[in-house]
Amino acid sequence: GGLSRQQFSKLRNKKHMSKRYVLLFSIGMRLTVEQTEELLISGGYSGFKDNDPYDSTIKDFIRKRNFDITEIDNALYERTGTCLFYQE
Image (cartoon, rainbow, N blue to C red; front, side, top):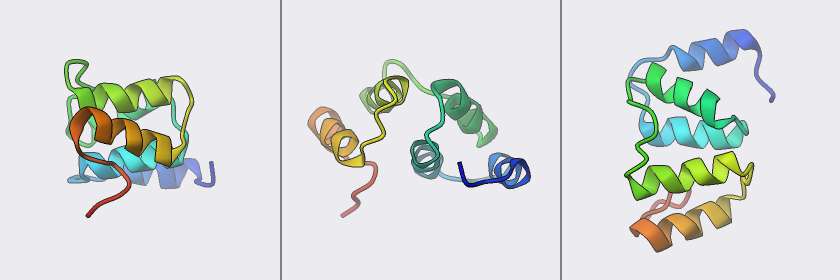
């Protein structure tokens, strides 16, 4: 994935990283749902919230191993009115 274990560990243990950053990193590194959950929790978040349309959309894409940023943003915009990658 382009990062050594040491670099990944530094990112994983970083305090105060935004949830958006964690998700961007997870998708960019093509992490699994389990790895993404671990990274979210290490960043101080509770993991994916299944009742949250934003979280469940991203989780579905990761589970399906679909890391197409355009498809992810289109689905997010349709379901929530916001995007992960494109920020106005």
